[in-house]
View 1 (tube, rainbow, N blue to C red):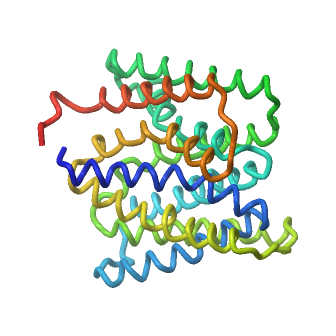
View 2: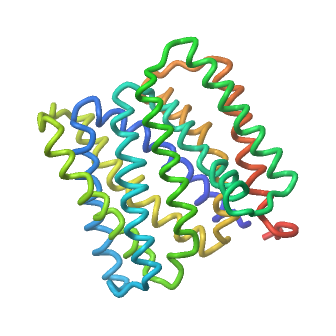
Length: 293
């Protein structure tokens, strides 16, 4: 793995992790589902325009359309929709930690339901990851936590796990950015009816809200996807996914700096254990020895 790939991997992890802090700012000032539906509409249109400029096509294979619809519903509408609602009462750091367990859940579900082999290092990573989650949850429960918001986060990450398992490999064959743009538009279309029916459309316009909305639309919403595509094309999906091990640390660090969220010693211990777990699981998937460059 070369220096440029490492820098881009670090950038990807930082942008992904920062989404929870910007979302927390947004939902404090605007209705969550409406804000997310608008974000997906803007991000989706921009992604489709860029895809067309790159001469990507609307002509997708059957598996690509399935991936577009399943991911649009499960990732964008369910996972992120539930997270936006939850972050009205759940801290961004906790939301980021729960979401970052997705690679662990995918590995566990693959072993339990698909019969996929997990190497000893991967098993150690799974055990460590869930121990880390237990440490953090124990600390947070002692300090008080909204159970409904926590439940929404758990359901959301489970929905993302299911989507990841269902559509693995289904987006191969080109048109990746077009697929991502259409996924965002699917998510927007699914969210709008609930947003307009269930939410008051009152918005407290402020500089932090506008800045957070623009940031989450352009950076986690669009730039992260472009960096991910570049990273996968350079080092492969499995090696690129190893950068997910940084998400728990970066998620809590960014929330602490930007939002002033307090961290306990048990939080930091739990984050470190989860990071080891995610890294171990991802490294166990790399066949043979990783190349030097």
